[in-house]
Each structure stands twice: as structure tokens, then as C-alpha cells.
Length: 340
Image (tube, rainbow, N blue to C red):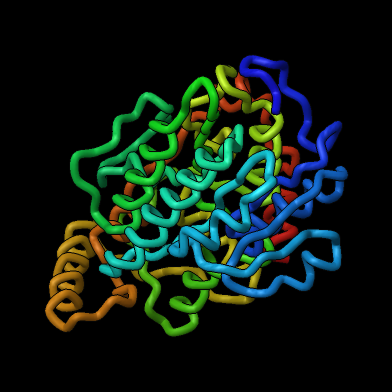
């Protein structure tokens, strides 16, 4: 094991121990795995399914659940570092699964890493951890965690990130990266859900349509995580910190959505809903779903109304400075790869 404070060295050189990617079969995690394998880093993948497409590339795939501490520890034994990309997404009221996977699952991985003397831990965080519902324009890493969150996912991601950063120590380096509104081929969450809503005729512009947001192409986010793996060491400049990862310049939320819709053969969003009405509808849906005991995502929530109507864009100066990161794939090329 390297001494604390040693100079950063790429994980693919000089060390045989694998990097464990928890959630390595997912949208972002699989791309991190492929980048590490391509440069010669040994990679172990831990997830809920079999991943033959990663195994054929050379990944050591282990099947298991992040809620099983023994399975997590067994998968991590002998690893030099951990990239924790496992998460339970959603904007609804599924508090148990949100907190179980996003909080307890992360704590299980942290506990195993400390017990096994793993030296570094890279966490896939979310900007939702610092979103309270208002506009964020040019936000940076000094943004505080809000006292209250508008959905269980945001609250859980905040708790998990705080746990990750609190574990940073002279012997165990941790960092959190916060990619915002990731898109790209293979996405199963953001745009597929928007497209499904558009096909059903239920998609409405919320608000005036002038809100600016940050977006992040998934391959550029993967690059940031590999850079963090290389630069993270105990007592290094990035240890114990969080970083926003997204395009340096924001886009107009509804212009970007409409452009994606038309590029895939769907009609533009023409109908709109005032933000106060959407917010009130979201509150009603949340109350109704809670009364009925439903845990799937409602058509509208207060969090979703804010995401669709408010500006939320972030500066990436610190990621440029500390990680040496910049988007390798320009936005126009990323758009073409995703929606053409």
C-alpha cells in the first residue's frame, strides 16, 4: 500500500490489485469499467445481475446486493480502490428503498473499505444533494446542504455523500463527484422517461421556459471518475471534497428537451403549465400516493416541478483545477451521438 501523501499514480500502472466498481453494470459505472479495462487496470464489478458484456472484456464480475454487508466485503477483498456507482433513482415516496440503497448501501461499502484497508473511495454523488427547490445559477461547491429536501432521493444522496466525505482520513481518502443531468446512449432514466411522457401526450413545459440547467454527457462524466481515481490519495488536494461535473456552460432546459424530442421524431412541447400550479399538483400527488401506500413515481412532484421550471446550473472551475478535467466530447457531438 502506498504511503499517505505519495504522488498520484494511474491505477493501471504498477499495481495488480483490482479496482472495485460497485454498480459497474449501470449507465455510468459500465463506462468507468470499460475505461479502466482499456488502459490495463484490473477491474472487479459488483452488482445485482450478470454482466457478460463486461466479463468478456476482462472484468471480474461478482453478483450481490449492496444491502448485504458480507457480500460487499467479499467482493472488495484484495481491491486497491472503490468507485461506488450503485444508486436507487426516483422522485417518488419510496423512502425505504431510497435510504436503504443510497444510504445504507453506501455505508456498507465504506465500512468494508475501512475494514479491508482500501486506500481510496470515489463516490458518484448528485447535485440534488444541495438543491432546495429555488434557482441555482452558477452554483459552486460552497453551496450548503439544505435543511429540507423535496424528495427522498435528494435527501438520501445528501446523507450518503456526507457519510462518504466524513470518512476521509489520513489513511482513507474519499471524494464525491456530482454529475448533473447525465445523458448519452444507454440512458434508462432521464430522456427515456421524458420521451415516454411525450408519446403519451402528457409532457408539459413547466414555467416560462427560460430556466437554464447544466447537463453532462455520460462519457465525460466517466472520464472525471477515472481522473479522480488517479489523483485521489490520502492528504491529496481532492481528498474529502465534492465536485460538480457538467458542461461548463448551461443550456436552456426546454430548448434542449425540444431539440432532443424533434431529433428522435417526436413533437415539440407546446403546452405549458405555470410553476405554482405544477408545484401544487405535485404536492397533491405526493399526498395521494402516501395515502394509497404507493411507492412508484407520481406524474408530478414538487421536486420534479422545481427541476423543470427552476434554473440549476453549476460551475466546474474546481474540477478543472483539481482533477484536470474538461469535457473531452463537445456538447454538439454528445448530442449527435445520443439522439441521432
